[in-house]
Amino acid sequence: MAQDTAAAGNGGTSDASAGGGAIGIGDINSGGNSGGSIAVGNIGGGDDVKVVYDKYGKPVVVDGDDDGAAVAIDGGDVTTSTSLDVSADGGVAISDASGGDGNFAFVS
Image (cartoon, rainbow, N blue to C red):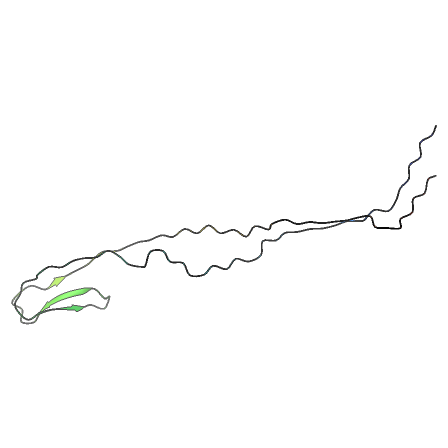
């Protein structure tokens, strides 16, 4: 007995993609933006000693009548690092190329 094969139309091609899109990141607080603190005790030099700040915002003790030495206070540098790990995974992509209805198959 001979075996016959029937061919019917297929659904064609189908494409699917799951692009990750864009990521929006708001404010990042990495520790309050404060450095070290320095406590300064009594500084001699008379009753006209006062604390002023230089152009960098650092306090400097100034003696008005030069009967004592000026004192500079420097807290050094502070470095902080913040690491972020973000992802825009694409998720699931589903595609379908069904053959449809009403296809004809011929056997020869």
